[in-house]
Figure 1 (tube, rainbow, N blue to C red):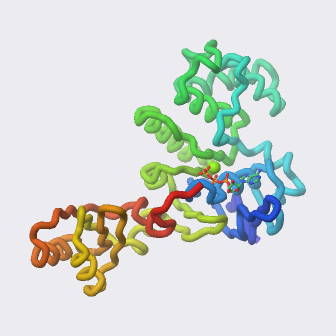
Figure 2: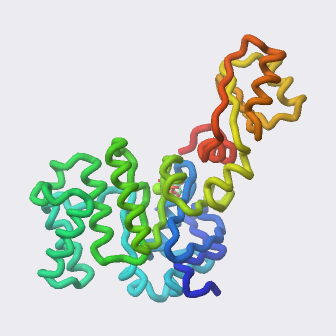
Figure 3: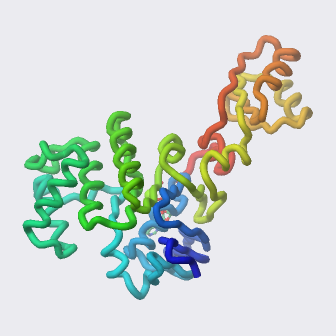
Length: 306
Ligand SMILES: Nc1ncnc2c1ncn2[C@@H]1O[C@H](COP(=O)(O)OP(=O)(O)OP(=O)(O)O)[C@@H](O)[C@H]1O
Ligand SMILES: [Mg+2]
């Protein structure tokens, strides 16, 4: 169906493990050159979806086309054009940094001299060239993640899949990865990103979906989703009295609570602050801009998952 610029098209995509449905009939499309985010609580079905896209896990039902090709029929042609940074670091612990890349390059049929050249380029790109002779076990978590990303680029893929690329990284490493991702996007690559970091999704993604229990809850550009589903601002009240909650509900405010805070989602935080100050002058309130985390918690709730 989709035009030539459609890189991924999923329709009624479903994955069952025995009786359990991990991905429950989802539809989405990703355009060429887009950075597309998949968000959701633990166990939402993000990695399962990603694995079907890179032909590592067969669909139970539905259709899934990547570069216009059917994943069941043409996995080799699809895989040749995809780079995958998987959620787990699956580097070869017995090889050096450099050798991890050159060995991987051979799976894609790159001849040895070309592979070495490409490996050097990518290690430089990810800031790892000085560490080329290190053993994998001597690398910190952040260095390993960067190496997995470098490895995902070995075949110069058109589609780069990043499954939680920055989990466990310090802020410096995360910013470096973000910077590389932006560079790759500018180079025209299509990027599929899963993440638990709302700031990461907000800063990198052109569009995103939030999944829960195998289904897509919302889809759109992050800022638009926040604006339309949450509002512009959030007022937080710490340790609120029950009377304030009653007042908020009676006033028709868009409210939510957790163990010790009351949240009011609103277009004008200042109006809410004034209303609270008028009736409950001793309450501690703050107002801030609404963000993706507000939307995420609103849609998926505040209780723990898996
Ligand atoms: N091979 C498998 N066999 C049985 N169940 C599985 C298998 N792989 C995943 N699941 C289950 O499918 C559900 C979705 O898992 P998935 O790994 O896709 O979640 P996720 O959204 O990537 O979560 P996380 O944020 O923790 O990485 C989970 O309940 C998981 O336990
Ligand atoms: Mg996952």
